[in-house]
Image 1: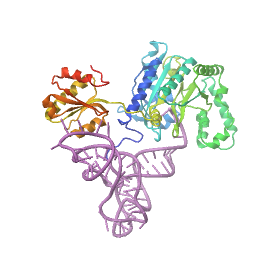
Image 2: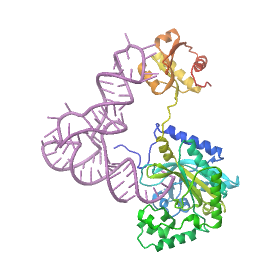
Image 3: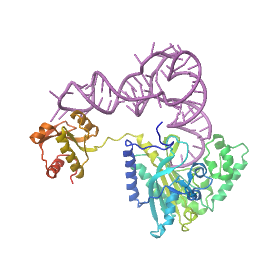
Length: 428
RNA sequence: GUGGGCGUGGCUCAGUUGGUUGGAGCACCGGGUUGUGGCCUCGGAGGUCGUGGGUUCAAGUCCCAUCGCUCACCCCA
Protein backbone atom coordinates (compact mmCIF):
# COMPACT_ATOMS: atom_id res chain seq x y z
CA UNK A 1 0.00 0.00 0.00
CA UNK A 2 1.42 3.33 -1.06
CA UNK A 3 1.95 6.05 1.51
CA UNK A 4 -1.07 8.22 2.04
CA UNK A 5 -1.60 11.55 3.76
CA UNK A 6 -2.18 11.42 7.50
CA UNK A 7 -5.69 11.30 8.91
CA UNK A 8 -7.09 14.79 8.99
CA UNK A 9 -4.37 16.15 6.71
CA UNK A 10 -5.52 17.08 3.24
CA UNK A 11 -3.95 17.93 -0.07
CA UNK A 12 -5.33 21.05 -1.65
CA UNK A 13 -5.35 20.09 -5.31
CA UNK A 14 -4.96 22.45 -8.31
CA UNK A 15 -8.70 22.27 -8.84
CA UNK A 16 -9.31 24.00 -5.53
CA UNK A 17 -6.41 26.42 -5.26
CA UNK A 18 -8.03 29.20 -7.32
CA UNK A 19 -10.74 29.41 -4.68
CA UNK A 20 -8.14 29.57 -1.92
CA UNK A 21 -6.30 32.28 -3.78
CA UNK A 22 -9.47 34.28 -4.20
CA UNK A 23 -10.16 34.10 -0.49
CA UNK A 24 -6.62 35.12 0.39
CA UNK A 25 -6.51 37.96 -2.11
CA UNK A 26 -9.81 39.32 -0.90
CA UNK A 27 -8.78 39.11 2.73
CA UNK A 28 -5.32 40.60 2.24
CA UNK A 29 -6.83 43.48 0.35
CA UNK A 30 -9.26 44.17 3.16
CA UNK A 31 -6.60 43.81 5.85
CA UNK A 32 -4.54 46.39 4.03
CA UNK A 33 -7.47 48.79 3.79
CA UNK A 34 -8.05 48.45 7.53
CA UNK A 35 -4.42 49.20 8.27
CA UNK A 36 -3.15 45.73 9.08
CA UNK A 37 0.36 44.53 8.32
CA UNK A 38 1.28 40.93 7.72
CA UNK A 39 3.46 39.07 10.19
CA UNK A 40 4.78 35.58 9.55
CA UNK A 41 5.73 33.47 12.51
CA UNK A 42 6.97 29.88 12.93
CA UNK A 43 4.44 27.08 13.21
CA UNK A 44 6.51 25.34 15.86
CA UNK A 45 6.93 26.80 19.34
CA UNK A 46 7.84 25.70 22.82
CA UNK A 47 4.93 23.82 24.34
CA UNK A 48 5.00 26.16 27.31
CA UNK A 49 3.84 29.09 25.17
CA UNK A 50 0.53 27.46 24.36
CA UNK A 51 -0.02 26.05 27.82
CA UNK A 52 0.46 29.47 29.33
CA UNK A 53 -1.73 31.30 26.84
CA UNK A 54 -4.54 28.94 25.95
CA UNK A 55 -4.97 27.51 29.44
CA UNK A 56 -4.10 24.22 31.06
CA UNK A 57 -7.65 22.99 31.45
CA UNK A 58 -8.81 23.68 27.92
CA UNK A 59 -9.53 20.81 25.56
CA UNK A 60 -6.92 22.12 23.18
CA UNK A 61 -4.11 21.84 25.70
CA UNK A 62 -5.39 18.76 27.48
CA UNK A 63 -5.87 16.51 24.49
CA UNK A 64 -5.51 18.15 21.11
CA UNK A 65 -1.96 19.42 20.79
CA UNK A 66 0.68 17.91 18.54
CA UNK A 67 3.43 17.88 21.14
CA UNK A 68 6.70 16.02 20.90
CA UNK A 69 10.17 15.96 22.31
CA UNK A 70 12.90 17.66 20.33
CA UNK A 71 16.22 15.92 19.77
CA UNK A 72 17.75 17.93 22.56
CA UNK A 73 14.96 17.07 24.96
CA UNK A 74 12.83 20.22 24.73
CA UNK A 75 9.04 20.03 24.49
CA UNK A 76 7.73 21.43 21.21
CA UNK A 77 4.20 21.89 19.88
CA UNK A 78 2.79 22.55 16.45
CA UNK A 79 0.70 25.64 16.97
CA UNK A 80 -2.98 24.92 17.59
CA UNK A 81 -3.89 28.59 17.05
CA UNK A 82 -2.21 31.75 15.93
CA UNK A 83 -2.56 34.33 18.65
CA UNK A 84 0.00 32.89 21.05
CA UNK A 85 2.74 32.84 18.44
CA UNK A 86 2.00 36.33 17.19
CA UNK A 87 2.02 37.72 20.72
CA UNK A 88 5.27 35.93 21.46
CA UNK A 89 6.79 37.64 18.45
CA UNK A 90 5.22 40.96 19.39
CA UNK A 91 6.81 40.76 22.81
CA UNK A 92 10.13 39.36 21.64
CA UNK A 93 10.65 42.21 19.19
CA UNK A 94 9.11 44.95 21.34
CA UNK A 95 6.80 45.92 18.54
CA UNK A 96 4.81 48.12 20.90
CA UNK A 97 7.69 50.60 20.81
CA UNK A 98 7.29 51.15 17.08
CA UNK A 99 3.78 52.50 17.29
CA UNK A 100 1.19 52.70 20.03
CA UNK A 101 -1.31 50.45 18.29
CA UNK A 102 -0.15 47.46 16.31
CA UNK A 103 -2.45 45.85 13.79
CA UNK A 104 -1.18 42.47 12.63
CA UNK A 105 -2.50 39.66 10.51
CA UNK A 106 -1.15 36.24 9.61
CA UNK A 107 -2.32 33.38 7.44
CA UNK A 108 -1.25 29.81 7.80
CA UNK A 109 -1.77 26.27 9.04
CA UNK A 110 -2.80 25.25 12.56
CA UNK A 111 -2.75 21.77 14.07
CA UNK A 112 -5.13 20.06 16.45
CA UNK A 113 -5.34 16.34 17.07
CA UNK A 114 -9.10 15.94 16.85
CA UNK A 115 -11.34 13.43 15.13
CA UNK A 116 -11.84 14.88 11.66
CA UNK A 117 -15.26 15.56 10.23
CA UNK A 118 -16.93 18.01 7.90
CA UNK A 119 -15.27 21.39 8.33
CA UNK A 120 -12.81 20.06 10.89
CA UNK A 121 -9.31 18.84 10.12
CA UNK A 122 -6.14 18.14 12.03
CA UNK A 123 -4.20 20.53 9.88
CA UNK A 124 -6.39 23.45 8.97
CA UNK A 125 -5.76 27.02 7.92
CA UNK A 126 -6.70 30.25 9.51
CA UNK A 127 -6.30 33.88 8.77
CA UNK A 128 -6.06 35.66 12.05
CA UNK A 129 -5.73 39.26 13.05
CA UNK A 130 -4.66 40.95 16.27
CA UNK A 131 -4.84 44.52 17.49
CA UNK A 132 -2.47 45.28 20.35
CA UNK A 133 -2.42 48.38 22.45
CA UNK A 134 -6.01 49.59 22.50
CA UNK A 135 -8.82 48.70 24.86
CA UNK A 136 -11.38 51.04 23.41
CA UNK A 137 -14.63 49.36 22.41
CA UNK A 138 -14.39 51.13 19.09
CA UNK A 139 -11.66 48.66 18.12
CA UNK A 140 -13.86 45.72 19.07
CA UNK A 141 -16.57 46.94 16.75
CA UNK A 142 -14.12 47.82 14.00
CA UNK A 143 -12.69 44.32 14.07
CA UNK A 144 -16.11 42.74 13.80
CA UNK A 145 -16.89 45.13 10.97
CA UNK A 146 -13.77 43.97 9.14
CA UNK A 147 -14.71 40.32 9.56
CA UNK A 148 -18.15 41.21 8.30
CA UNK A 149 -16.61 42.96 5.31
CA UNK A 150 -14.59 39.89 4.36
CA UNK A 151 -17.67 37.71 4.28
CA UNK A 152 -19.56 40.34 2.36
CA UNK A 153 -16.91 40.71 -0.32
CA UNK A 154 -16.74 36.94 -0.69
CA UNK A 155 -20.49 36.91 -1.19
CA UNK A 156 -21.15 34.98 2.01
CA UNK A 157 -23.57 35.59 4.81
CA UNK A 158 -23.35 34.61 8.44
CA UNK A 159 -24.78 35.97 11.63
CA UNK A 160 -22.77 37.77 14.23
CA UNK A 161 -23.15 36.72 17.84
CA UNK A 162 -21.49 38.62 20.63
CA UNK A 163 -21.06 38.25 24.35
CA UNK A 164 -18.95 39.64 27.16
CA UNK A 165 -17.03 37.37 29.47
CA UNK A 166 -16.15 40.08 31.97
CA UNK A 167 -12.76 40.68 33.46
CA UNK A 168 -10.72 39.42 36.43
CA UNK A 169 -12.72 41.82 38.59
CA UNK A 170 -16.13 40.43 37.86
CA UNK A 171 -15.74 36.93 36.50
CA UNK A 172 -14.93 35.22 39.82
CA UNK A 173 -18.15 36.52 41.27
CA UNK A 174 -20.06 35.24 38.29
CA UNK A 175 -18.38 31.86 38.48
CA UNK A 176 -19.44 31.67 42.10
CA UNK A 177 -23.01 32.57 41.22
CA UNK A 178 -22.92 29.88 38.57
CA UNK A 179 -21.61 27.30 41.04
CA UNK A 180 -24.23 28.22 43.56
CA UNK A 181 -26.93 27.84 40.95
CA UNK A 182 -25.63 24.48 39.82
CA UNK A 183 -25.24 23.23 43.38
CA UNK A 184 -28.94 23.81 43.96
CA UNK A 185 -29.77 21.39 41.19
CA UNK A 186 -30.39 17.97 42.61
CA UNK A 187 -30.93 16.07 39.41
CA UNK A 188 -27.78 14.53 38.06
CA UNK A 189 -25.82 16.42 35.50
CA UNK A 190 -23.95 14.81 32.67
CA UNK A 191 -20.42 13.65 33.50
CA UNK A 192 -18.86 16.50 31.62
CA UNK A 193 -20.79 19.13 33.51
CA UNK A 194 -19.96 17.48 36.81
CA UNK A 195 -16.32 17.91 35.93
CA UNK A 196 -16.82 21.41 34.55
CA UNK A 197 -18.45 22.53 37.80
CA UNK A 198 -15.07 22.28 39.45
CA UNK A 199 -12.62 23.10 36.70
CA UNK A 200 -14.34 25.61 34.47
CA UNK A 201 -17.92 26.51 35.40
CA UNK A 202 -18.31 28.76 32.36
CA UNK A 203 -18.33 25.76 30.08
CA UNK A 204 -21.48 24.47 31.67
CA UNK A 205 -23.27 27.15 29.69
CA UNK A 206 -22.10 25.50 26.52
CA UNK A 207 -23.40 22.01 27.31
CA UNK A 208 -25.45 20.44 24.53
CA UNK A 209 -26.94 17.74 26.72
CA UNK A 210 -30.69 18.27 26.76
CA UNK A 211 -31.34 17.30 30.34
CA UNK A 212 -28.61 19.66 31.44
CA UNK A 213 -30.03 22.45 29.35
CA UNK A 214 -33.46 21.98 30.85
CA UNK A 215 -32.05 22.24 34.34
CA UNK A 216 -30.19 25.36 33.44
CA UNK A 217 -33.35 27.31 32.71
CA UNK A 218 -32.94 30.57 34.57
CA UNK A 219 -29.20 30.19 34.97
CA UNK A 220 -27.48 33.46 35.79
CA UNK A 221 -26.38 35.15 32.60
CA UNK A 222 -23.00 36.75 32.16
CA UNK A 223 -24.06 40.12 30.79
CA UNK A 224 -26.16 40.64 33.95
CA UNK A 225 -23.20 40.08 36.26
CA UNK A 226 -20.54 42.29 34.74
CA UNK A 227 -18.80 44.99 36.73
CA UNK A 228 -19.52 48.61 35.89
CA UNK A 229 -16.52 48.97 33.59
CA UNK A 230 -17.27 45.80 31.66
CA UNK A 231 -20.92 46.72 31.35
CA UNK A 232 -19.99 50.10 29.95
CA UNK A 233 -17.51 48.54 27.55
CA UNK A 234 -20.06 46.05 26.29
CA UNK A 235 -22.66 48.77 25.80
CA UNK A 236 -20.21 50.85 23.83
CA UNK A 237 -19.31 47.90 21.60
CA UNK A 238 -22.98 47.51 20.83
CA UNK A 239 -23.41 51.21 20.21
CA UNK A 240 -20.54 51.24 17.72
CA UNK A 241 -21.94 48.21 15.93
CA UNK A 242 -25.24 50.04 15.69
CA UNK A 243 -23.46 53.08 14.27
CA UNK A 244 -22.17 50.90 11.45
CA UNK A 245 -25.56 49.24 11.08
CA UNK A 246 -24.04 45.81 11.52
CA UNK A 247 -26.67 43.35 12.70
CA UNK A 248 -25.79 41.15 15.65
CA UNK A 249 -27.32 39.13 18.43
CA UNK A 250 -26.24 38.85 22.04
CA UNK A 251 -25.63 35.23 22.98
CA UNK A 252 -25.16 35.06 26.75
CA UNK A 253 -24.26 31.38 26.49
CA UNK A 254 -21.41 31.81 24.08
CA UNK A 255 -18.21 30.53 25.65
CA UNK A 256 -14.94 30.39 23.82
CA UNK A 257 -12.54 27.48 23.94
CA UNK A 258 -9.56 29.46 25.10
CA UNK A 259 -9.09 30.71 28.63
CA UNK A 260 -7.45 34.01 27.81
CA UNK A 261 -10.56 35.87 26.66
CA UNK A 262 -11.85 38.86 28.57
CA UNK A 263 -14.81 41.08 27.88
CA UNK A 264 -15.88 40.99 24.24
CA UNK A 265 -16.14 37.67 22.44
CA UNK A 266 -17.83 37.06 19.13
CA UNK A 267 -18.56 34.40 16.54
CA UNK A 268 -19.71 34.45 12.95
CA UNK A 269 -22.02 31.49 12.68
CA UNK A 270 -23.78 29.73 9.83
CA UNK A 271 -25.89 26.64 9.43
CA UNK A 272 -24.17 25.48 6.26
CA UNK A 273 -21.13 23.77 7.75
CA UNK A 274 -22.56 20.50 8.96
CA UNK A 275 -22.11 20.14 12.68
CA UNK A 276 -19.70 23.03 12.72
CA UNK A 277 -21.13 26.50 13.00
CA UNK A 278 -18.36 29.07 13.28
CA UNK A 279 -16.62 30.47 10.21
CA UNK A 280 -14.84 32.99 12.33
CA UNK A 281 -14.50 33.86 15.98
CA UNK A 282 -12.46 35.91 18.35
CA UNK A 283 -12.41 38.16 21.33
CA UNK A 284 -10.55 40.46 23.62
CA UNK A 285 -7.60 39.28 25.70
CA UNK A 286 -6.52 42.24 27.79
CA UNK A 287 -4.35 40.34 30.25
CA UNK A 288 -2.63 37.94 27.90
CA UNK A 289 0.39 39.97 26.81
CA UNK A 290 1.34 40.66 30.41
CA UNK A 291 0.75 37.03 31.26
CA UNK A 292 3.26 36.04 28.59
CA UNK A 293 5.84 38.37 30.04
CA UNK A 294 5.21 41.38 27.82
CA UNK A 295 4.46 44.97 28.66
CA UNK A 296 1.70 45.57 31.21
CA UNK A 297 -0.88 46.81 30.57
CA UNK A 298 -1.13 45.81 26.94
CA UNK A 299 -4.72 45.22 25.92
CA UNK A 300 -5.40 43.14 22.84
CA UNK A 301 -8.15 41.71 20.71
CA UNK A 302 -8.21 39.41 17.72
CA UNK A 303 -10.13 36.95 15.66
CA UNK A 304 -9.56 34.10 13.26
CA UNK A 305 -11.43 32.78 10.26
CA UNK A 306 -11.26 29.17 9.13
CA UNK A 307 -10.09 28.98 5.53
CA UNK A 308 -11.41 25.47 4.91
CA UNK A 309 -14.78 26.59 6.18
CA UNK A 310 -14.82 29.58 3.87
CA UNK A 311 -13.90 27.25 1.00
CA UNK A 312 -16.77 24.93 1.95
CA UNK A 313 -19.22 27.80 1.99
CA UNK A 314 -18.03 29.15 -1.34
CA UNK A 315 -18.16 25.71 -2.94
CA UNK A 316 -21.80 25.46 -2.01
CA UNK A 317 -22.53 28.55 -4.07
CA UNK A 318 -22.55 28.84 -7.84
CA UNK A 319 -19.14 28.32 -9.30
CA UNK A 320 -17.80 31.13 -11.41
CA UNK A 321 -16.97 30.67 -15.11
CA UNK A 322 -13.46 29.54 -15.96
CA UNK A 323 -11.29 32.54 -16.79
CA UNK A 324 -9.05 32.42 -19.85
CA UNK A 325 -5.78 30.99 -18.61
CA UNK A 326 -3.95 30.78 -21.90
CA UNK A 327 -3.47 33.60 -24.39
CA UNK A 328 -2.02 31.47 -27.16
CA UNK A 329 -1.49 27.80 -27.92
CA UNK A 330 1.22 27.11 -30.46
CA UNK A 331 0.52 24.00 -32.51
CA UNK A 332 3.51 22.74 -34.45
CA UNK A 333 3.81 20.03 -37.08
CA UNK A 334 7.21 18.64 -37.86
CA UNK A 335 10.64 19.11 -36.41
CA UNK A 336 11.39 22.49 -37.97
CA UNK A 337 8.04 23.89 -36.85
CA UNK A 338 8.55 22.63 -33.34
CA UNK A 339 11.90 24.39 -33.14
CA UNK A 340 10.23 27.64 -34.10
CA UNK A 341 7.35 27.00 -31.72
CA UNK A 342 9.79 26.35 -28.89
CA UNK A 343 11.57 29.66 -29.50
CA UNK A 344 8.34 31.59 -29.93
CA UNK A 345 6.85 30.06 -26.81
CA UNK A 346 9.80 31.26 -24.76
CA UNK A 347 9.78 34.70 -26.40
CA UNK A 348 6.08 35.32 -25.75
CA UNK A 349 6.20 34.04 -22.19
CA UNK A 350 9.08 36.40 -21.60
CA UNK A 351 6.87 39.18 -22.90
CA UNK A 352 4.27 38.45 -20.26
CA UNK A 353 1.91 36.18 -22.16
CA UNK A 354 0.55 32.88 -21.02
CA UNK A 355 1.18 30.45 -23.82
CA UNK A 356 1.68 26.75 -24.31
CA UNK A 357 2.70 24.14 -26.85
CA UNK A 358 2.69 20.38 -27.13
CA UNK A 359 6.04 18.93 -26.10
CA UNK A 360 5.35 15.47 -27.49
CA UNK A 361 4.83 16.21 -31.17
CA UNK A 362 1.38 14.72 -31.35
CA UNK A 363 -1.20 15.06 -34.09
CA UNK A 364 -2.74 18.39 -34.95
CA UNK A 365 -6.08 17.06 -33.79
CA UNK A 366 -4.62 16.26 -30.42
CA UNK A 367 -2.92 19.64 -30.22
CA UNK A 368 -6.19 21.41 -30.98
CA UNK A 369 -7.76 19.39 -28.24
CA UNK A 370 -5.10 20.50 -25.80
CA UNK A 371 -5.67 24.11 -26.82
CA UNK A 372 -9.36 23.70 -26.12
CA UNK A 373 -8.66 22.10 -22.77
CA UNK A 374 -6.45 25.03 -21.77
CA UNK A 375 -9.20 27.38 -22.86
CA UNK A 376 -6.74 29.16 -25.13
CA UNK A 377 -8.02 32.32 -26.77
CA UNK A 378 -6.05 31.78 -30.00
CA UNK A 379 -4.09 28.95 -31.53
CA UNK A 380 -1.15 29.54 -33.83
CA UNK A 381 -0.73 26.70 -36.30
CA UNK A 382 2.76 26.19 -37.66
CA UNK A 383 2.31 23.72 -40.50
CA UNK A 384 5.06 22.32 -42.65
CA UNK A 385 3.54 23.58 -45.87
CA UNK A 386 2.83 27.08 -44.59
CA UNK A 387 6.30 27.28 -43.16
CA UNK A 388 7.70 26.76 -46.64
CA UNK A 389 5.49 29.60 -47.86
CA UNK A 390 6.44 31.86 -44.98
CA UNK A 391 3.00 32.01 -43.39
CA UNK A 392 1.23 30.64 -40.33
CA UNK A 393 -2.41 30.30 -39.35
CA UNK A 394 -3.92 32.15 -36.43
CA UNK A 395 -7.16 30.59 -35.24
CA UNK A 396 -9.74 32.20 -33.00
CA UNK A 397 -10.81 29.30 -30.83
CA UNK A 398 -14.15 30.77 -29.97
CA UNK A 399 -15.37 31.86 -33.41
CA UNK A 400 -13.37 29.18 -35.28
CA UNK A 401 -12.27 31.88 -37.73
CA UNK A 402 -8.70 31.72 -38.87
CA UNK A 403 -6.38 33.92 -40.90
CA UNK A 404 -3.06 33.45 -42.59
CA UNK A 405 -0.38 35.79 -41.34
CA UNK A 406 3.17 36.25 -42.56
CA UNK A 407 5.92 34.52 -40.67
CA UNK A 408 9.07 36.28 -39.57
CA UNK A 409 11.91 34.23 -38.14
CA UNK A 410 13.20 37.32 -36.32
CA UNK A 411 11.19 36.97 -33.14
CA UNK A 412 12.24 40.35 -31.80
CA UNK A 413 10.17 41.77 -34.64
CA UNK A 414 7.55 39.10 -35.04
CA UNK A 415 6.78 38.60 -31.36
CA UNK A 416 5.36 42.08 -30.79
CA UNK A 417 3.45 41.86 -34.09
CA UNK A 418 1.79 38.68 -32.92
CA UNK A 419 0.99 40.09 -29.53
CA UNK A 420 -0.89 42.92 -31.21
CA UNK A 421 -3.21 40.34 -32.75
CA UNK A 422 -4.06 38.73 -29.42
CA UNK A 423 -6.97 40.28 -27.53
CA UNK A 424 -6.40 40.93 -23.86
CA UNK A 425 -2.72 40.06 -24.06
CA UNK A 426 -0.45 42.71 -22.66
CA UNK A 427 2.80 43.18 -24.52
CA UNK A 428 5.96 43.91 -22.65
C1' G B 1 -11.91 8.63 23.15
C1' U B 2 -17.39 6.75 21.58
C1' G B 3 -21.08 5.57 17.78
C1' G B 4 -23.40 5.20 12.59
C1' G B 5 -22.52 4.76 7.22
C1' C B 6 -19.27 3.39 3.29
C1' G B 7 -14.73 0.83 0.77
C1' U B 8 -15.39 -2.18 -7.13
C1' G B 9 -10.29 1.51 -13.01
C1' G B 10 -8.08 8.61 -12.01
C1' C B 11 -13.58 10.32 -10.69
C1' U B 12 -19.07 8.96 -9.98
C1' C B 13 -21.28 4.42 -9.47
C1' A B 14 -23.93 -0.63 -11.40
C1' G B 15 -22.94 -5.77 -10.23
C1' U B 16 -29.49 -10.29 -9.75
C1' U B 17 -30.90 -16.20 -5.00
C1' G B 18 -22.69 -16.99 -4.39
C1' G B 19 -21.71 -19.54 -10.80
C1' U B 20 -17.52 -19.58 -15.18
C1' U B 21 -14.17 -13.82 -19.52
C1' G B 22 -16.03 -8.08 -13.29
C1' G B 23 -19.44 -3.63 -16.33
C1' A B 24 -21.26 1.69 -17.48
C1' G B 25 -20.70 7.05 -17.61
C1' C B 26 -16.98 10.97 -17.18
C1' A B 27 -11.73 11.74 -17.97
C1' C B 28 -7.33 9.87 -20.91
C1' C B 29 -5.16 7.85 -25.80
C1' G B 30 -6.17 6.55 -31.00
C1' G B 31 -9.27 6.03 -35.62
C1' G B 32 -13.47 8.00 -38.57
C1' U B 33 -11.30 13.58 -40.99
C1' U B 34 -3.37 10.95 -44.79
C1' G B 35 -3.18 18.92 -41.23
C1' U B 36 -7.95 21.64 -37.35
C1' G B 37 -10.64 21.52 -30.51
C1' G B 38 -15.92 21.47 -28.14
C1' C B 39 -20.87 17.64 -30.79
C1' C B 40 -21.20 12.64 -32.93
C1' U B 41 -19.25 7.70 -33.85
C1' C B 42 -15.88 3.41 -33.42
C1' G B 43 -11.91 1.39 -30.82
C1' G B 44 -7.93 1.19 -26.92
C1' A B 45 -5.46 1.46 -22.41
C1' G B 46 -6.49 1.39 -17.31
C1' G B 47 -8.90 -2.99 -11.75
C1' U B 48 -4.20 -6.80 -5.94
C1' C B 49 -13.11 -5.79 -6.23
C1' G B 50 -9.28 -1.83 0.92
C1' U B 51 -6.31 -5.96 3.45
C1' G B 52 -5.99 -10.81 5.88
C1' G B 53 -8.35 -15.18 7.16
C1' G B 54 -12.72 -18.50 6.97
C1' U B 55 -17.15 -21.18 4.65
C1' U B 56 -17.82 -23.45 -0.35
C1' C B 57 -16.77 -27.48 -6.03
C1' A B 58 -17.04 -21.99 -6.71
C1' A B 59 -16.73 -15.46 -3.09
C1' G B 60 -16.93 -8.57 -5.65
C1' U B 61 -21.32 -11.19 -3.44
C1' C B 62 -21.76 -15.00 2.82
C1' C B 63 -18.94 -14.97 7.93
C1' C B 64 -14.89 -13.05 11.13
C1' A B 65 -10.98 -9.81 11.89
C1' U B 66 -8.29 -5.61 10.50
C1' C B 67 -7.15 -1.00 8.02
C1' G B 68 -8.95 3.29 5.65
C1' C B 69 -12.54 7.05 4.44
C1' U B 70 -16.76 9.65 5.99
C1' C B 71 -20.61 11.69 9.15
C1' A B 72 -21.98 12.56 14.11
C1' C B 73 -20.96 12.95 19.65
C1' C B 74 -17.23 15.91 22.19
C1' C B 75 -14.88 20.36 21.02
C1' C B 76 -13.81 24.16 17.76
C1' A B 77 -11.87 27.97 12.85
